Length: 434
Ligand code: GDP
Image (tube, rainbow, N blue to C red; front, top):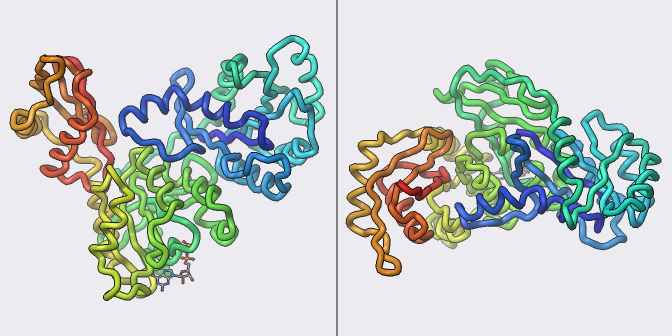
């Protein structure tokens, strides 16, 4: 999956463009999951090609007096994380010193950069846009983010610019784990404790990009690929990063993984940044395991695991069926359990329920508590099945699908989770006309 980053100084229309790109898809995704948590990351598609979009400006406050350092960080993030960069400028304002700073950074980049000149909605401005050749980035695209004119051409060029990615041949169906979390949570300590000093590396498979590498490990009788990323390796640099940046650094790792091992710091709790990463994984329909690390530091009489777990689960609503383990990377407490739980989530995510078994159980469940009648009409569900998709998706065929509302879908999901083990795995429920 390709990642696109939108960069540029504040108030040039990055967010409008971002929203325009993700809108259509988000509308669909949100109506299914009912949650939107992140305004700076979204999925999009054009001409049947899917891609992810990062609005790297999301954290830079919308004032004009942004420090050059912040812009620099934003662009560096884009360079590290994205496959293609869209650099937005504003024809009304012309080239500003900040634009020049960004252009200077981007001129050194080998990744494709699309220069997009915003607010071009008439012939006059089309002429004015010529000045942007001076940025030294070559050909530019003109558009108007408010009306959307020109964005089609920009998107065409974007799709063209995606690098040809060598198909990574994943011969074995090994779990791909990404260890994610905010700086200092203990990710590196966990990885080191898990794989040992003498690294049980069997093979190195070059990933789809230069900075996402799957490394195969053989440990405690389990075989798995650890999704390593630039973000993990460059942790020293990440430490002082703003919240938003360290979340965005997880994007590639998450997209590349089957399961995300979210490491949180027990002494700090399940914070906003942890939550953002969690919803990023959920949104991408990845399996999730939460490790409450540094449990050795917590006074056990003041806080029991159960209280702690309850507190976290409140934040996970409605996706609360997630394994939460209390570990210590330092004392190596429950690390094997953590690995076992992760492998289990991987199995859960792959699980296929036979159509006959599924119907046998679910039709009884539905009979016991049918969808509420609406406008004097009864909703009947006579048949259901799991779809042959990568992540668990279930379809229920009804005579009046539009009458089956969100609470009832939740009920169905809960019943599925009661009967089968889908812990740590997001589930999709669809109601279709039979
Ligand atoms: P990362 O940024 O997420 O990779 O975090 P590190 O692995 O670098 O850990 C940050 C700090 O927390 C380091 O000083 C570790 O020694 C410490 N640390 C990590 N795990 C534990 C743990 O389980 N218990 C305690 N007491 N300290 C830990």
